[in-house]
Image (cartoon, rainbow, N blue to C red):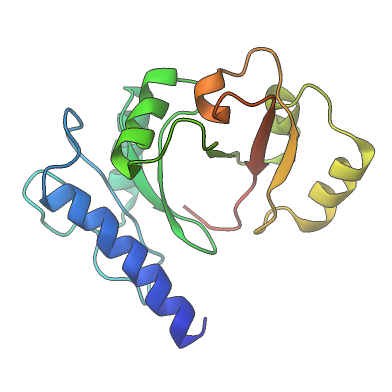
Length: 171
């Protein structure tokens, strides 16, 4: 990554840490951010007392548990750090909007771990989208497709489409 890109990533990470340190996370107990070993990102923090958290297996397991309970985590992708929640939990999704101070009409991206899960989120997966997913996932490609009926409008910003991607990051 170039110097400008590293600076951009570090800035987004610092912003996530500021949310934690300034108590802007309201009812959320913890926000975790993880970094790939040897990466240029600063040490992750939790909201408990703004202390560093190593990105070990136990912490990843804890973050998964936090997600399952409706919490929010900061996580890396191959391009940026993001704040995320269980996309199937509308209340957790609203927490992400509140944390980011994002208008509820601006959709979020759903991150999935494999292209086979696309059908859970999409009404239909056109052949062109299937071909793009097969060629570029995992990776920094976001597909925008018509949302499945079961997808809550909170995640799509009220739109009939949904943005989905499979990041190429080990976390």
